[in-house]
Image (cartoon, helix red, strand yellow):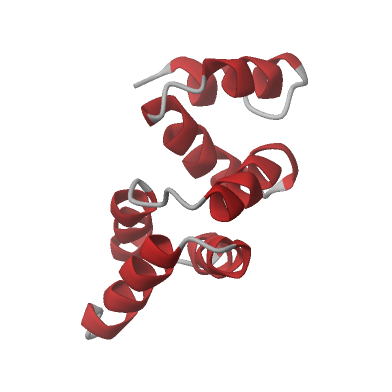
Length: 101
């Protein structure tokens, strides 16, 4: 499979970083294979638009297990420990998702 077009779309969506972009990336992540999940992990770190970041916080609490996991990684890398601690305290993510690096 030629992943380049998909990876470029993931990159572009992360750089735009709107709510709809975050939703699309989370949808791709939920059904993605290993190369896709790695690309999402890499490019998600480039998302800075507050609208997209807010959407990712919603997925941290309400997403599927893989969505919550990648959102936890995203917020850990941003050092947003209040959000991580809250998600862990509410049982949305487990200890490993919350505190492993």
